[in-house]
Image (cartoon, rainbow, N blue to C red):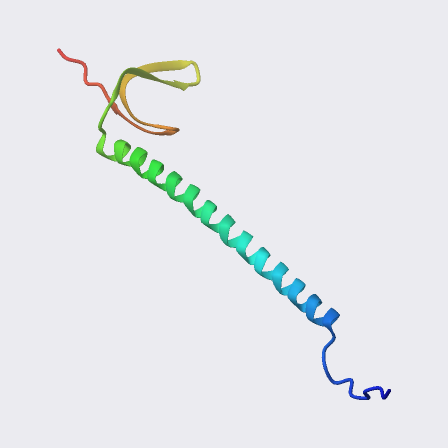
Length: 100
């Protein structure tokens, strides 16, 4: 029996290695795409929440009444009644005008 002397083809091991490497690359790309989708979803939800709170602050809707601000300078202290607008650490306030 004669042996072939032509060694120009790829072996099955090389082919399987190429398929494995390609599969791993596609798997990593897919997991990165899924992570990106989740990050974008969370960012969009946070952006919508921030926009709603900022809108409350800027339009001064839904005030929380009965709040006070204390201003201190040295030994002098003054308390001012205010209406508070906003939430989640984003606030605006207006001075309550005393009637009379």
